[in-house]
Image (cartoon, rainbow over all chains, first blue to last red; front, side, top):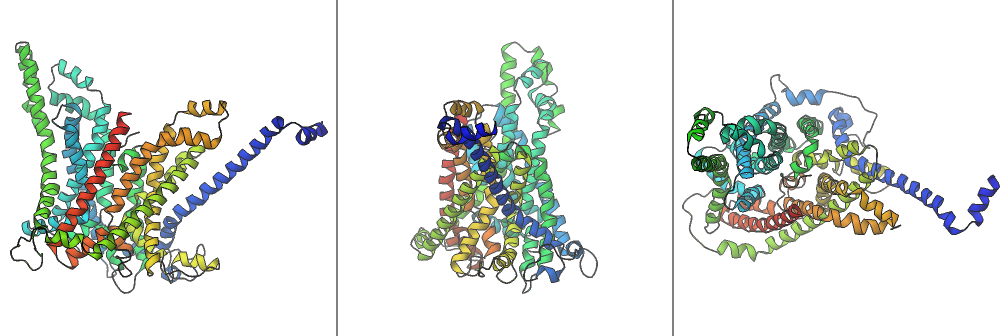
Length: 303
Length: 316
């Protein structure tokens, strides 16, 4: 029997020969694909792993030449330095983290309160030049921050909003409202307007119908949208660095960037601060992973 | 949002008691008022924080105003604009920006699409793979910039360390003119390849399976299937992702600021970064405003294009 198999392989017609060869080629290709994918994954993840590794290395090992990949002592000192000043008490970094929480949190709440009703109105009612309005709203989000910050800086200096948390909150809200409206409009579009019509037939007003029937259905969408707004404000750097100057107001991104200002850079501390800064974002992003496509395209693309 | 609710509770009674044509009209009116009440706060905020500043910048762009010198601004009309448009410095920055935008976006698109294609062909572990690949995109540009600066450090950076253990020479990534721009492109590609991947993957998974099955019944080659089924169906979505990235790359500032500060020399100074230097280091507010307005015009054109493709995609 074995001989006959050999025979078909060696002498058989081409038609019989192709299927096994193809399958083998398919498997070889599959292995190649997995290998390529793995290599790409390693390249993409290495910097993140290296950051985490650096944050738990002793300074001696951080600057080791050649770099130490596995053989190093684990220390939590850098993380301690992120939160506590060397003389005891809170560090400037931890204050900036707190500022970030306040600024990102409040601006997200404001953007949600302003954006969700607007999104609902755009979705439900005939608004004059609706497309143009929506385009205008989104285009404000695309303005180069470096350009917008010049007049905002002058404006804030005039009205005393420069170097205040309120100033940052206002500009972040203005940056998140377009996103909230676009993102939420998609979610509102998915809730049938008939629910509201039915409620209104039962004697509720339009507002009550929105508040009691549509809004509860929108809660998951609102949560996802708010999480993205939170991430955008949390990560924002340009406005933060130009519109604040004091340690008590500064948010985390400029504070972390400020760590490399001196002549010597404590890369262990930078890494630890970056890890602390990035961790909540990754957790939040994981929570809203279902809506990532819509979120990162500012609500424009929905799948 | 909560207080208007009790105010309008009397409406249902009115509606019930009114003559037939009235409810429709009163409902319509209240819908109108509701629309205005719901939309105008958001629009007012945008007018105050986005439109007004831009109009102010437009006004300043026609003057010789300087934020530090103070004093009244004198109208010099189009002098700022002609100065910018004829400046060799600006031409150089435009070229740098173009190289950076085209280089980074092309690399991201090719890599992102490749990864998405490879992932879409897997049957197991797709979710986990996607999640892992997405990590760089969610990081703040500050974190990304700082960390790559450390990794690309000529002395104790891990990249050079790996190169030397492979027997290759050291590279001064961020301190040589040409390599600095390449480094910037590489870092941006590292961060934003996941973006293209994510959107390409959304397009790829939306391609109906029966098309492939029909093609394989016809014994169509892999390449033929890719060219005639996959690409045409994913292309519109991919184009939107590419345009989106181009706009973002064009206005990029933070990564340049942190990774190279425009250096060495001016080799990585993009238009965004140059505007910052003119405005906040040179304090030529008027010139910087004109510069900014020109950048806004380019962004508006790109955004128009983006929206047009978006509308097209939605109509299909």
